[in-house]
Length: 243
Length: 342
Image (cartoon, rainbow over all chains, first blue to last red; front, side, top):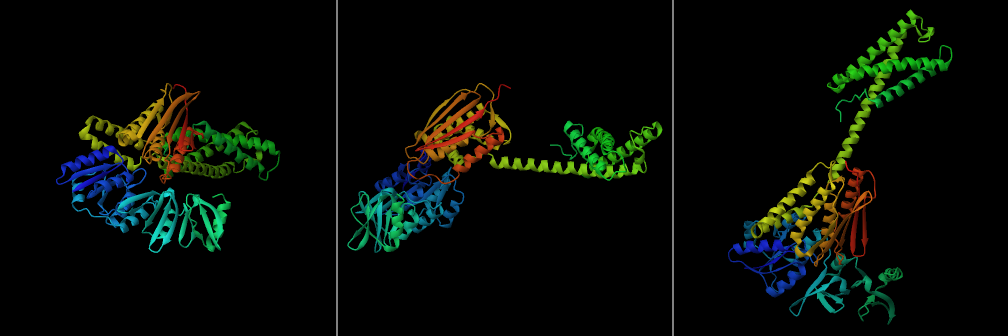
């Protein structure tokens, strides 16, 4: 079994590495210091298991796990944490495996012996409980590769049947999520302009009439999504407010 | 804190309080419908008599206090009360005898003499009961205020984040095999931090000790975070005595690490500068803030308020802690009043 060790503290990684070396039939595939590095390493090294620290700078463990689940062959995930107070009850409740640092070798061996993949439902339930923090990146597969888009580069979301189109500075991406869930998660950053569209507040440039419809001009994109009458007043107020 | 409710009757403050109570009583008595004569001379005579009784009473209680203090509240109150009644009886009898035998009418006018002893006793009994009750209530009130401020102080007592504890233990566990002597030092540093956090919050520590503690803390974080944490420590030596509440600097640095360094993948530098400025020791701590909006939820403001409150409780002034956020940097400035060499 090949294991990827992810922790932002070098000494914590060193200890896990040594503990894994002493266990039979295990191989350390590699290590990473934060969520984004972990995703890249997982894609490259294709480990069977990821030992994932929850609190890390940039992208935290929970978010990394949500993105890992999108890989073609998602690895099993075991979370590690120093202290989690209430959050750990949530982990128990959703049957997600976790280890408390400093980790005992026996506990580590037991967890690795019956580790399982964490499914997406479990993960999104967890991130809601963990303070409900929004993701820092969106992630989807395109032509078999994992593409990550920082949330602050997104210009607008547009619902399109069972997908949501994400338009960002360098291109676009299809997400298998609902527009409502995205609005709930990133509500502060985005405004609804139509039943099927959310735009980034800071990308809003002007409202224009075009072919009898009200449309919105956006910074960084030539597309002009349609604005419904219901949301027009709120958008005008936003423009006046300098937002 | 004395356990008995009876105040220190030998002390100046209590003597003064008793004199004031006595004078108010005298004023009341001379304002009541008079038998005749001048109210001002009445007040003078009544005051003389009342203060005579009051000061004798307080003198007796001063002598008896050591014995009274050993009793419980109810027996002590009863004994003090009986002693006071005895004093009133004695003084009124002496006054009567002096007036009769020596004809000192100045001391006791003719109109007063009927039932003088009984009237004195009755008025004195009421006044003594009210006074003792006053001292009892005052004592209860003081005890409550003290208990409350102590509870408040304990609630404010610096707490070390559990996350830091377990991560540090993990660091020590990791070091035991690769670098045992560093592991040993880490555990010593941790022990020092926890000893300080468990100490009596009302007692202060010398500034040097507090700075050493802050250094121990940064040593641990340095091991934990590796090259992500850089420390620029330029702290002048403290030459004079300066006491301060314990664990003020460490939580400020913990904030700097927790909110400033840890959320940044690239890490950053914490600057610590300590200089003497006139009669203050000024400690400035500065850290970068995360670039992304991934500010860690919770507690920064509360922690800062807590530190401010503890400084205020210790030094009794405010403006000792200033925090400033300039763009992507955070700066905390601590001004500690120095006291001359003790």
